[in-house]
Every structure is written in C-alpha cells, then in structure tokens.
Length: 257
Ligand SMILES: C[S@@+](CC[C@H](N)C(=O)[O-])C[C@H]1O[C@@H](n2cnc3c(N)ncnc32)[C@H](O)[C@@H]1O
Image 1: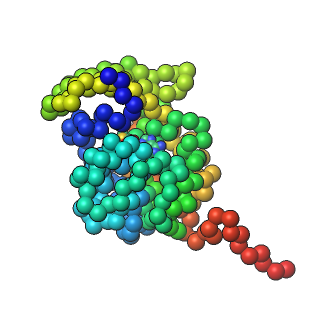
Image 2: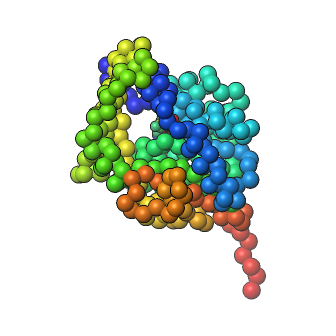
Image 3: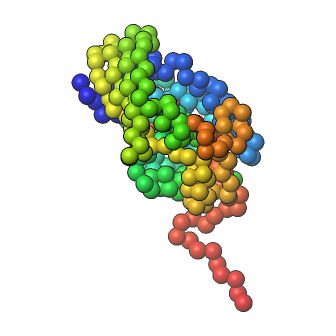
C-alpha cells in the first residue's frame, strides 16, 4: 500500500526512531538558546510529529504549543503528553495563540519545505510570533548532506517488530532528495515517499536576515562551532530583534521636524 507522507508511518515512527538522540538535541537547542539570551518562557514547537521533543520540553516544565500538519502523528503525540497544546496546521501559516520566547523545529522539519519561498514564509511567520529577543532554533540537512547521505543509499533493518527498507535518492536536476520508505509493521505493509529540500548555511543566513532576524548563527552539532558550506547537517539559532516591533500594519509615529 502506498500512503501519503506521515500517515501510516505514524504507527511505527517511534519504534524506528528509538535510537534518535532526542534528549541530546533538546539539551543542545536549549543551551544554545540560553547562550543567546533565552531565559525560559513559552515554546512554539514546529513540526512536533509524534511529540518526542514535546515530551522532553514538558518534562522541563515548559509551556509548549506544538504544530504539525499530520493528524496521525499528532494522535501519537497526544497519547504521550500531559499539558502541551497540540495544533493541526501548516507551520508556514498556522493560527497561533500569542507569542513565544523560543521556537524549535527538530529533525529535518524545515527540509520538508520544498517550494521556493516556503522558507521565507516560515521565517516571517515565526518572527511574527517571537517575543523581542526570542530565539528560533532548528536543524537542517544541507546539499552536501542530502547528496552524500541520501544519494543512492539503502538502509534496511529491524526495529522491534518493524522491518524497514528505505531507499534514498538525490536528484541533482531538481535539487531534491527522496526516500521511498517501505515498512512492514504490526499493522501491515506500506510505502511512503518523502522528499526533502536542502538548506545551506549561506542561504539560511540570507533568508533569515532578509526576514528580519537580528542575528543568525549557523553552527555544527555538537560543537556549536560556525558551520561552513561543506557541513552535511547544521543547526540554526536566529534571534528576533530585541526592541519591541509594532504589530503588523501599525506604523510608528513620525517624528516632528
Ligand atoms: C521527520 S518528522 C520530525 C518530527 C519530530 N519533530 C521529531 O523530531 O520526531 C517531520 C514532521 O514535520 C511535519 N511537517 C512537515 N511539513 C510540515 C508543514 N508544512 N507544516 C506542519 N508540519 C509539517 C510532518 O508532518 C512530520 O511530523
């Protein structure tokens, strides 16, 4: 059975991802945000999936609003969370309650934005919902990463009761990577096709600066050292301007004279 992305996969996602170092990623993201002035407060999680990061944020006592476009992934998340607010929506334009001190998007979430202009839309939407000085932290696969790691590689194995065979393909013509994710789990066999678009360090700095972020640090994991164009996978820490901005559509008064 062929299934749309993040539908059938939801039921086996946590089993397949059981070795993903979510706790280390959350530590890295929060420590990086703290170094850039974050002192706690409400967190917006973008593309929360099955809620593995959300749960870790909850455990730290953080108030979390988490958005994802997949009802099936959100159903799995809901079962493991106690007080986070889960919203079904598109991270580029979801209606969000209020503003946040930190926005977080973990595990290739932005690479799922495939069209020109998607990343700029997301950046503007996130910035509009960050408090002054708030931080947006996310990871991203770069061109080098998707070409090297997704270029023709087949990953096959067992995770618990799930047999998986994921065929990766890098298309230099379109600049997109594809994975044909075949899984045989307790609920049967399915294949989902997922596509990822790379985002490179220089491109990310330009896009986020253009969107209005005051500083954009693109760094390596786990060192935190500045990334360059050869790095396969990067983390971004983008800070909103520290001064309060007028709400959209409201112009600051002109000075007389
Ligand atoms: C690889 S999963 C990562 C999930 C989770 N962050 C984790 O670390 O396990 C990517 C998630 O992004 C979500 N996603 C992709 N594009 C999206 C969009 N435009 N709006 C909302 N969610 C999106 C998918 O539904 C999926 O749950």
